[in-house]
Amino acid sequence: MGNTIKRLTRKPPQSLTLRQLMSNEFDLQRKKFIVTGSSSGYGLALSKLLTQLNGHVIGTVRSTEKSKPTLESIREHLDKTKPKNPGVFETMQLELTSFDSVRNFAQEYQAKHSNLHALVNNAGIGLLPEFNKTVDGFEETYQVNLLSPYYLTTQLVPLLRRGVRDYGEPSKILFVSSKIHHYPRDETFLLERLWNDPKEYQPNKQYAYSKLAAILVMLEMAERLESYQIHVNALDPVGSLSLNTNFHRYSEEDAKNNLMTFLRRFKQITSPDKAAYYGLNILANPDHRDTTGEYFTRMNIRLPSRLANNEELCMEMLDQTEYCIYTALKEKHREKQQSLQQ
Image 1: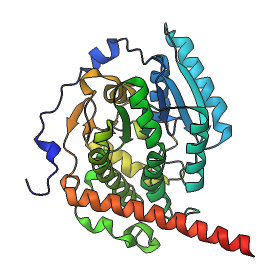
Image 2 (image 1 turned 90 degrees about the vertical axis):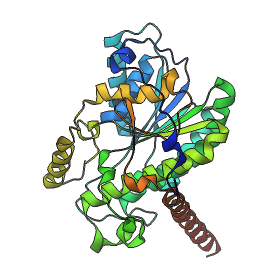
Image 3 (image 1 turned 180 degrees about the vertical axis):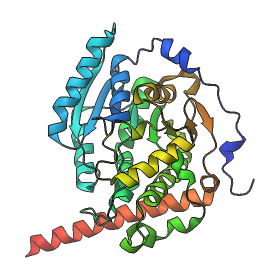
């Protein structure tokens, strides 16, 4: 099959239907889940569901001001659903525009918790009306949707490995994606100028590129982490990112409307509360205990875009991601050393 990823030859496991999944009384047994971007939209809906099912959920928020309303929303959900065995929900601060914040979050989490069962890389941004650079020197969409989630994941792999040991089952990494990753048609999106050149910046295109890049990285991570029993998958939650969320908090109305038109074209509108069960299907359904390296739409495994089916491209994207992070961290270290010598 040439460079086509071997996983495409596997017979996909069967999912429970949405009705079966919603009627099942899962007990997550206080397993620990990190859900990034838990203050609104899909991240909040998934956090509610995991907490309702006796999970220990650590939801990330961009600022301490968002902690109180997020906690209140979780509490109201538990009061309404009245689960027999509710779990625990707590918030921790994480700002994905900063590698320092990512590292601090990972260190703080490790100081408080001994393991991790699942990491849901949900937080994202898109449709920024203007080209913005982060403190680390990258275009904001690129860093928030790809570089920082990958850096966070690598920082948490040791805790995910301890989760395998402590819980006696595979740990999970889930990247929240979008059908818009089908938009790029050729490999030019790998060129750095498309990521970091203000002249090349287009909001919709940048978001689509970042989502495709994240899927490429996900597929390569799945190959590399499978021997550790850490399973990596991606989920398109079917438009729930676009409803009741801070996802496009900086976006102009035209950019928002363009994305909504795209999503409606593919019947991509689902409420976050319903879409939360799609994530639960991957994270807790026994039928997907050993599923890794797959792209889900709703409850079903689907093929990602043509570009995502190239193994060499997956390796190249992950190598480029690691290089960008490494050079940025190295430059920060150099600047810190220079300031200490002055």
